[in-house]
Structures are given as structure tokens and as C-alpha cells.
Length: 273
Image 1: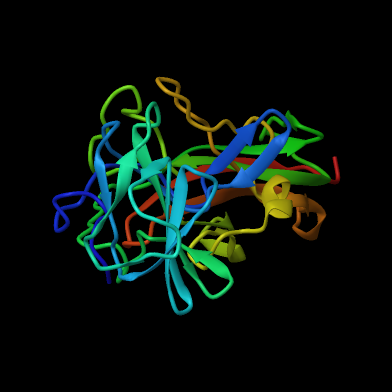
Image 2: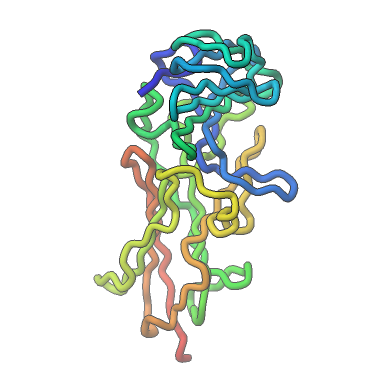
């Protein structure tokens, strides 16, 4: 457990981007490898743990202690390379025009979510994720749910709202849930049990998984422009494994603190028609 890198250290600050959020720039696609903590330009940034400073690229630095490292990006450093710093020591100031600190935690050879229980503290989240749409798709085109046949992609659109209001122009923008699962029901029976294709809780996903996780149409947040998060729940799901009839796909999104949101899509299988 460690405090916030901004004053007051013992109070939660607004977070405008979450771990594994989509990052899209021109042809580049990647997963967000930390969190973005809102802060005014020029705000002082402090070490959450003691360690040795490693300057990286002029506007970012890491404080490393053993196998643990904490990164601070979009920061004008006020410390020297390889200087040892103490907890709560000044590291630098938020560089304009970023209006945030990109904060990372690295353990061994992998990044971890700073907002997980037992990490950045205090932090509470009582906002429920939302599943806003479920789509059955083939070759990028949505299929009418009234007569589904053959192999289909299953896509869900889902998001969460940060629990603390973020200052403008980054206010009211979505972030990603930690997990998404789905199942198929027929009447009162479960004919395809819960499956969890999206799980951001275990660490940063590799960049080559981006197109497998995020479906076309996904957009990242921009200032004043909400993003859209479209998740592949299944690629080319073979509907022929089930007999024709009426079914219901149920999708549930959850966060790291047990909050959930769900949506159902009734559909009809018609493989033999």
C-alpha cells in the first residue's frame, strides 16, 4: 500500500484514465500501462516510495527500489539521475499542457494496476460499470438478432465512470471496466456457461493482443470527446453447436471493487432454416 503522488497524500485524487484503456494514435494501438491522475499544470509531484531516481527522456522518471518501480510521466524533474529520494520527497512538477500525471507501478518485469485493492490508497469506487450494447457481427457488420446462423463475433460495448469528478476538459469521459464475462441462456437453463474473455486485473496486456480485445470502432478519450470501448467477447463463435430456438446472451462487466453492470440480448438461432 502506498500514498498518492500529489498533496494531500492521504486523499484520493480524480483519475481520468485507467489501466489497459485503449491508446490509439495514427496506426499505433496499445494498452494504457498506468493510470492518469488529474492535476493542474505545474502541480508538485512527490515520491510514493523511497528509491533511486532514473530519469527517462527528460519529462519522465522512475523511482526504483529492488524489484519495485514507480513511474511518473509528463513531469519536469526536480531531482538528479541516480539520486536517492525518500517517501514524499519532491520529484518535479506537472508539465504543461498535460494536466495529469501518468503514474505506473512495475513489479519484476510487468506493470500492475495502481488502483487495485492494497496498492494506491486511499481509493474507493462505488460506481457500477455499464454494458450499453451487445452486437452479433460478421465481417464487421452487425447482424439482426432475429435469425442468427453460422459463425459470429460477439461484441459488447461497456464502460465505467470515474468515481471522482475529473476537471474540464476531461470531465465525464468513460474508463474501462476490469472484467467482462458472458453466457448464453435458453429458457431457464444456461447452455453456455460464464466465460471471461476480458480480464485486465492480472497485469498489462501485450500490444499484439489489442486487435483481439478491442473491436473495430473503439475510440480512446479525447479532451471533450468521449471514447467508445468495444470488446470482443468471442471471435467466430459457432452457433451451430446449439439447436435452433430462442436464446439470450447475458453480459456482465465488473470492476476491481465488486461493482457490476449487465445487459441481455435476446436472439434467435436459425441454422437449419
